[in-house]
Length: 373
Image 1 (cartoon, rainbow, N blue to C red):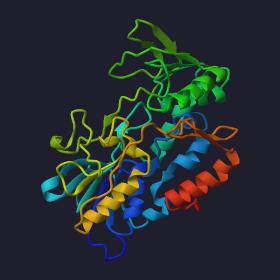
Image 2: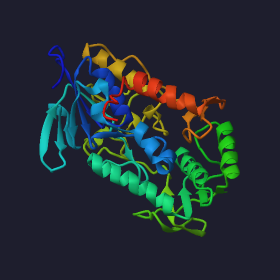
Image 3: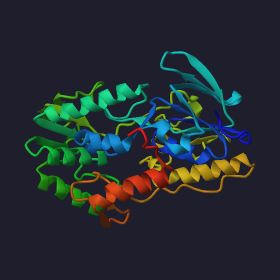
Image 4: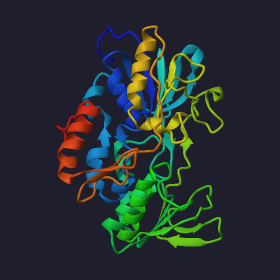
């Protein structure tokens, strides 16, 4: 179950999203690894716009059963939600889909449990069938709408608005920004580039419209703004970045005032020599940028050093600006934005035949078993 018997130390990873899988894939050669996953698939938090408008393509590349990752063959996968962590005894209690509980022991714990954000990221325990049904319903909701309001101008908001408008030119798509420019945190060249792309595609971009947030944000109907304005749409997409960290299983003294894990630059959890945190749940910087930027390599390196009695010696330094893909592959290729503001374009053929299958799936994720496709 745990691979070779020489692996004497156990690492438990809470959360098997993008960062959890990347960490597990690199630790499984050296440790007994147990991954706690609320879903039996890696349901990526990336490319929301493509998920809503090109679901079959998105499913193929971004909704992958965990048992197809070759580097996870030696990882014990536990389907359920972390209920509590007891640091003195180094144990995690997990609640299974049938509400039964089991207790797992660890030598090292990695918290990669992510955050809830809008309607597309949560920690609800679901089966593969339930995942597929929900994805299909979300895409159908957008397809059937004549008017779409996207609330929030970050990368998910820009990606949603632009992809929907391009996929359905006859729809009225409106993007509501709380400030004066889309894509806060990105270089201003990227901001200007996508504001022009949105307007050219026909998206109505409305600035200085900060929405009034209700306990249950509506997915259709009316949205009120702090200015006193109101809008109505058949479909409402919330991308306001109001993240809620999945950390209810941790003692409160491990968390900052917003509920994120207090994380050192080494990605160690402050005050605990056996715990690490990474991704959206870690308080590395306001953008929670260790979810990207190759931070998983730093965590793996430092954890391996700790396991041999050495101090962690690699530091995670957040980039000045966010970088990478913003709206995903389009019909004519993929635009990548650098931290400096420069752009690089890859052809669609290169994306579909080299970047995703060879670079992402084979090199970064260490291989995907496609025999069941």
